[in-house]
Image 1: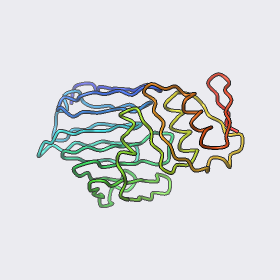
Image 2: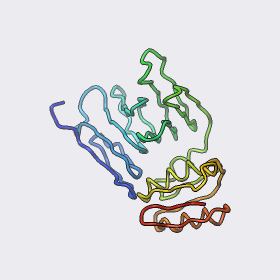
Image 3: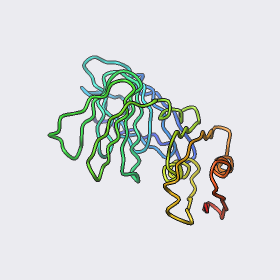
Image 4: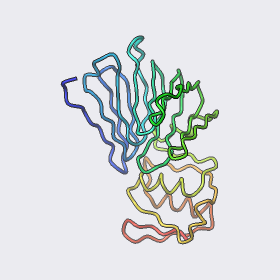
Length: 219
């Protein structure tokens, strides 16, 4: 298309919502950017994603909607799904809430695309080129749109990565073996600040935090 691409970004610490020209709704998580042709013309409706977004795609019979990430492409006819593909993470995940999607692999274009059915989560390890598909509670992956992070059984490293993006901070572990500590809990960040999240961690683990500017130490 001759039109320059449009870019929408949710800065660190904020989420954003937009509606594309075809009526598709997109929610962007903190630190996420999407790029697309503003008119969404052509045989395919194409959006590039860096970060995490939830898409509610308007069905158009012969015009598939395609989300490109660095490692995967997600092809859709009409459906609701979540994709997480931050450039600093070695894993891309796609979670299908309803409808059906097809995953294509950028590193091996000859590989047959993988179809997901409702309620499935596909996790692709980029360096190892390994794909795992399993049934999931999709709400765990999409609750961020309501300002919640729900962790059922996550390691501390995963939680730290989420909080860093959410609050634009750096979290350091005094002892790196702590990163494998498992954790369950809910962080609500609509009306809460980073201290609420850190206090949740303190309450449910034996860790204590101290803060120095935008750097936080857990020990």
